[in-house]
Length: 87
Image 1 (tube, rainbow, N blue to C red):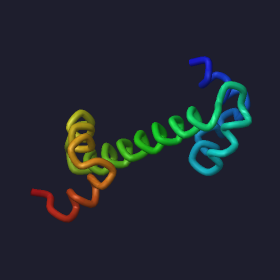
Image 2: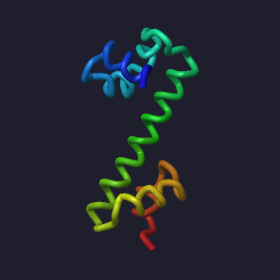
Image 3: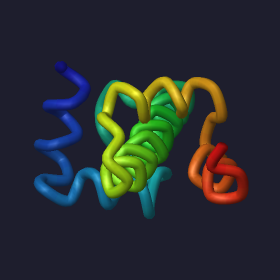
């Protein structure tokens, strides 16, 4: 929570864009070194992948909980795997 507050204080509402497009800028925030910046970027990327899968599967009538389980099974390639072979 402390790190998140610092990031929002530094970048405002554009913090998610900074994480996605300018991850090196995270290191300008006090307490964010190379290791923490990398962890933030990785966690953000994973959440984006889960979000993509949830939205894709929601359009096909599947609940979010199922989408998360599918992500855990197939990883970031879940949408392409399901599209290639839905059965």
